[in-house]
Length: 451
Image (cartoon, rainbow, N blue to C red; front, top):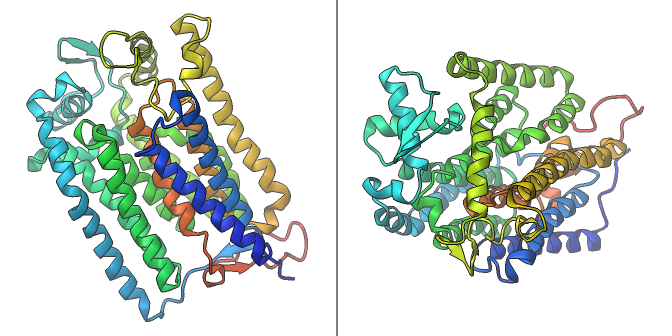
């Protein structure tokens, strides 16, 4: 028995809702950031992210994802044009990136940010054979290293080649775009819809770089964008090795998704216990091997580094002299996080931060649980790959909304993930979303046939 997707009128409204939520999200991250003030702008941004994930999930109910036939004549053309879109992004945005990096020469970078100088310490220690994870002395102060191994190891080639780390990270942003182009090429969309979806992220990248100068000028955060884009591709395919490797890259760089992983493990197990064992086993083995290789001498250093960072956060919350916005700490009132709602509370800064940390943990734990409770009664009607994609979007929206220091360049990761959600919501879904066949018995296995 084939299950029917939502009726065409409902699907059209859901497509419009997805696009509206996405476009509003783009505006609130770029030219419209803080447009309705530092209190309500992040609320609107969070609602856009949750609406995007929820509408996409309802839209794909009773459907499973399939790929365009391998022999489709236009597949090669789509890949070539997709590659052209990546090159277009490099040309369109490369000049802006060059100006931003040029304004912050490496010799002066430490006066504005310690991100790249700290990464240079990690890399130089490793190349010289020294112990990487020990206290760092930089710019007249010392701190414990808090970057996981895969946050700095990719910059070893950049160091050897004499390339600025920020340019190296910019390449990871192009990698994210390339991963997205691979996805939309494989969906077999109509030419008009495909061109629209191929070009929209190019414009989004340009708008983001124009409006968030710190992203390319001071940070290497776009490295994580590349990692998570590869994870999105891996989730939608069924290679255990690809999924495991992508998970390891994400966990050992920006480990934002940690509390979402139990839900993903359940989804993997439901899809295929054998594949789940392979994916989870390989991911754990790789993660363990990397952590042991670098942290065997002091396994608790990351925990101590996080405790040390608490004092830094308190200092940021109390910063009323320098780097302020209307007399408020700029890194708290960014327009992307809900921290301002705690900032003016009756408690002292340290107590307010601890309260926000508690809420942050609670809501991030609740999101996967709620998605799991929603999915389980409908498990025969949903493609687990799409559930994973949409639930992680909702999780990332919540995670970055409740950060104690809501840096914009961190939260942009949620916007990059939105590309992949929008890609699978189509005005012509029959090209890649096929009706699910209801299993003969409740325990007959996964409702997601092998594509």
